[in-house]
Length: 447
Length: 107
Picture (cartoon, rainbow over the protein chains, first blue to last red):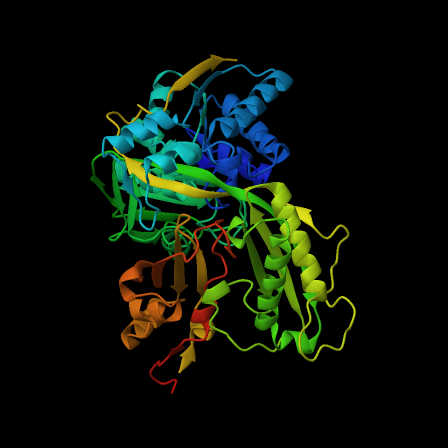
């Protein structure tokens, strides 16, 4: 099985895919999404990668799959895998088929859930928070702007059983499309899931790092991984360390229906570019599906400015306190109390990257950059608060001030920028459906 | 003494979902990994101290197969929520770099 890259739309060298197709693979796939870029994408329905980039990747994969009569599977389409994200990818595939005269049977697997469905799980006491997830209530479910379920391999297996050659899935456990294809071919779940774990990130298990293609062979007791670009190679250590990636444990990988345990894995070089992995095990567990949901928090505006004033830098925390006070007073002038908005300062050169976790308390920076963010229930209020914050940063006085003009450098005109709304993940829970396919309806289309 | 920045091959942080950060330290050989492990400096307590959290909040796993240590900790602010500074959790590893490992022969 081949994976073309770590994410649909990241791009990959065409030669790598060609080299892979010469090895007679049984499936081409790519993972399309993640929660990694934050809650905005699920909340808003926007895709992370551009339509151009996704279309380029799909065009090459589609031609390859059709020419070699093998399936093309894409999980977590459009990033977050909700209905609008999936629709964007479905439309790209239809467009390519029209433009290039392709014909095939397509399966589209939805993963966006009605809130009534989520509420039924909640009221039935059938919802468990994932570690550090927020508490859930009937109200927080009602507030959710969008909820997706994360499917396992079963809907992909069903779509393959029904003869689909192109399968576009909503939110999907990253390894599941490949794991499903291997399990369906009669291979045991442990190496099948391990193969999916390798393939979900494209050539990431190889060195040097880059967005590229990986081929994985699954056997009854082992998995073999090899990058398709001759400049890269998998080493036992590069493959072993892939188990560390974006997972809370390198040994325990929780998936729908079980746990992939990699504690006893053995990594052996097959040659200087391919690695064989054995010793993985699979423990079946009650079937759970993860739900991801977001809620709208508010509307935002931001501005960026900087200071080169040593007197100001020396007392910057104090200065920001007086800026806050000035903003609160001015905003109070149109009847808004401070609980109606949030003003967030990220001070680069001081604690912009780590915030309150920053252990370095004393700084020697000759300049500081300030990213100012205002958040409120409406865009109009956010804009108004930000405008006062800008003015107050320029003109608020401090002891020792020599620069009697506005005392802050703004690089842009206009300086104030309206942002997209802020969403947060408010559902990150598992449910136990009766059937692995229950929440994921499949529609077929002959193109 | 040897700083982690000077002896590790990889030291990185990343999201493990929107509510957790996972931090990895990888060494170039099993021998070095074993030596570092033997000092007992890299453990849940170290991460608790560096990140201002309690030891019970740290999920710490030594991973000899990868010559690595992994620690997963709760995010102070969930990814993308109000006040977050690092959506991907990609720049939260720096406090580890200066940690001194009392390797034998490096005194």
